[in-house]
Image 1: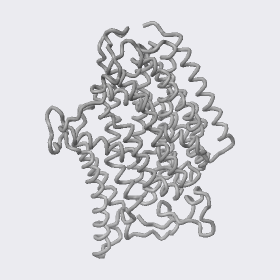
Image 2: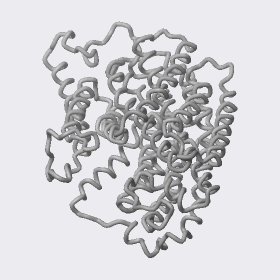
Image 3: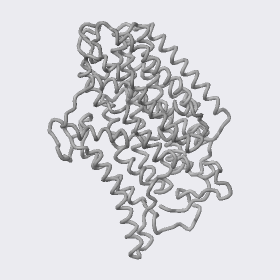
Image 4: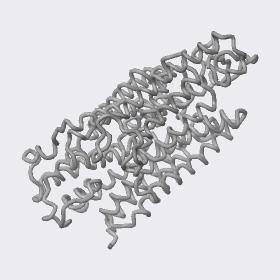
Amino acid sequence: MAVNWGGLIAVIIFYIVILCIGLFAARKTRGKTDSEDLMLAGRNIGLVVGIFTMTATWVGGGYINGTAELVYSTGLLWAQAPWGYAISLVIGGILFAKKMREQGYVTMLDPFQQKYGERMGGLLFLPALSGEVFWSAAILSSLGATVSVILEINLQIAVIISACIAVFYTLFGGLYSVAYTDVVQLICIFIGLWICLPFALTSEYVEPISESKSEWLGEWDSKYTGVWLDSALLLMLGGIPWQVYFQRVLSSKTAGRAQVLSFVAAGGCVIMAIPSVLVGAVARGTDWNSTAYGKDVENSNIVLPLVLQYLTPPIISFIGLGAVSAAVMSSADSSILSASSMFARNIYKLIFRQKASEQEILWVMRVAIFAMGILSTILSLTINSIYGLWYLCSDFVYVVLFPQLFCVVYFSFCNTYGSLAGYIIGLFLRLGGGEPLLGLEPFIKYPYYDDVDGQLFPFRTLCMVVSFITILVVSVLAHWILTSFGLDKKWDVFLCITNIPLDPTEKYGHMEMDAKDPAKGEKDNMETTYTIVR
């Protein structure tokens, strides 16, 4: 294939602009040796920038490409991500944003390690890490598909260059660079796609969407009611326990502002999905055999780049490509930073090197950013079913992490025994349901199982509920057994109920705020007195 030099030059210019903005924002971290400045931008993100970067939590390459794909293939009725993620931001703002920010946590895993211990926190790190890494890999893959269609260059080159740029400015600027580039990237996404739409809508090959609405709106099949409900709840509740979301919440100046960011960003998610919905509707009403493409669309995940390439003028398609590239980078850099923050703080510092200096943590985090970027890039280039892996990891976040997060925030009586039991049961039940995209055969056939359509029962939600109940029941049961029968302290193997250490300042328990200055910096709170309540 001949390289489309005009489009390539346009994308290079766009990447240079993004890189310059990211490096400019990185100047805010110059001379600072506190790792929290890199992770949370000094908890000093402004309202406008905060709204943009919170919206960018979910509005990425997978979001805009996936919305267009689903509208084209199954109809708007089944494109649940726009409103599902919007509702997740609202629920997150109501239930978790204020409480998490008031406690001054640095990452989403902090409350787990403080209440359940560092090892249980490390175990919960695994689904959180896999979700972020596979999400980054999935959206890098979506960029490769788009670029290969429009620019006709090698997919691997496009993915590697994009990943390198995102890692480079994140490496130096942390959340400052991610947040400020999010502003530019979201503007590019919105303007770029809206510029393309008038040309696509008025193309001679496209039937008016008002006449083809029966096709792109989709049809309801009661057989799949359970699947629809399961997916909806997964988006609404499973979209909350992600470090990429809580990094924005915890970087806010106040708890109230953290809630405001969540609520406003929910509207932003819906607004940003509108052009993608229209692109999917246009693609559905297009006579592709009459276009230069010359055949029916067999691979629906490239619908958006096909519309940009064959239904708009070349210069307009380049603008649309810039929008898609922006969407990818706005999500990839966020996920890479989130995973690296959790590793540096919750794994390296709190498990292996409790006395590590801030400078040491800073360098560990930078190495982790580089490593996460490489890992995401390799996965996106080598695993064909990357989206299948991401779906499975998203299920783990919903089934395992959501009930854990709800319990650690709202139920003080929960302990390590309940947390571990809920983790194991939820993981087992979810793996038992199988995953068709990865060829994992189910060894648990839930009600209404069909040999052709697979699991039709909302089994993911069932797994989540069972995991939630298990945490509560086992916590209460463990406390009762260890306190009612006069058992020796050695039986409390997790040191969470009866075996209170003699040192009253042991870490990872419930934080006691400074009585003289309750508004003292959150960082100080993390280093002061702890009471063991595991």
